[in-house]
Image 1 (cartoon, rainbow, N blue to C red):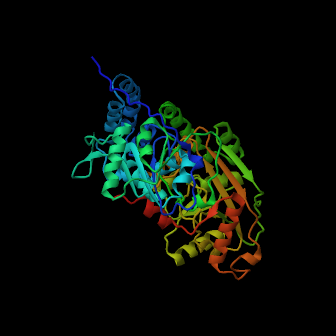
Image 2 (image 1 turned 60 degrees about the vertical axis):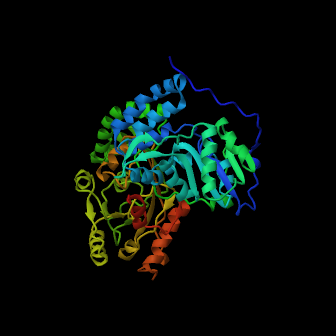
Image 3 (image 1 turned 120 degrees about the vertical axis):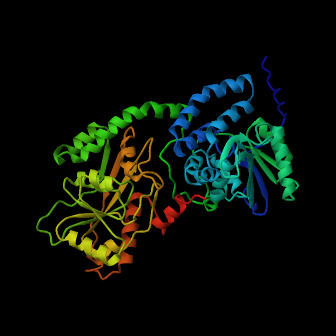
Length: 500
């Protein structure tokens, strides 16, 4: 005979809506916030478990987790929420290295957490000087993100068993699964006692299990999910670290329905991707119609310069960098061959490329000579950022391109991906074009700006190469609504490839 735990009694308490929480003068105050359903709208971490399973590199684990979801629903109904959570945690975390989970929290899950946030809660939370979080999810999968981006002091959450070699067993430490309100309150009181705080100044929650700790705080506010879009005030935005770099292949949060859709779509997507990758190898006269027929969407803004054999010098296209396909797409839109100069590209990508690619050596004198030689006979495209950036930012432009030519045409390149990201920092780069083409309708927007006027160039305008590079970056940012930064390729890879 199955026994179910007696449900906790609902507390007859009423709390103010979180929108009524005062945000000024809170710099010296302490806030305690529930993660599940309060800071993020999701009340159950299954989708984040699935994201971890995908991005940790195990499709078998992801498939097992999806297959276990209906079983978890039965366990929640027939046994308890605790039993369902323990099963999902075991499938997700067993055999994973704890440092890998912590890294994925910052570098992969961060994007989904930001998308899933309740802006009202976020605005109130960041106004406090010290912020603490409580969650039923494993602490190691949320704390690195919360500390990195929101400045949270500590997280009280479910604790996993970790072996001496750093690997998770998938088991939960006794008494640490924080699903019930009574257990949450007990764990929080013990934690705040260790840091010598009697109780927080404000508590934010949303569910019955949050009410006990909310009533313990000096003030309490309830987060109610509302459909209207809310713009964070500038004072709140300044307290949040911007998300510029992130990794991972999935561009969506894999809820059970979405995860099932991805698994069902993938076989067809593989066939479709193979056909789409062949498009650039077809004659230019049929390339664009064929791309449209296969579901590739292209938008062109501005007017691009026609090929002029009598021009005194060839054109240097300086573009923003979204995927490895940027030069290939540019060539197809122009309807003529261009040569792409790159700092790093796999041998396989070179072999499969439909246009000529030339490697740069990162030796300034040698690279300058190579680019000048190419420009004497052919149009060249360069991505001065040196690496791709997914978010609406432009990384710092390397000034080398400005030194080798005055015939510079800035081109904004923007790629849109529905299911899969076509870039990676830690995965197989040669698979980037393939994943981009696996999307339902991969999309590219090209925006051609006016060629640089003489007074803005190094040769005829006597400008420094840094001035020209910064000008091109600013012009592309202004035209596209992107934000220019001083961040570099080195900054990106230091953040996205470091794992303890």
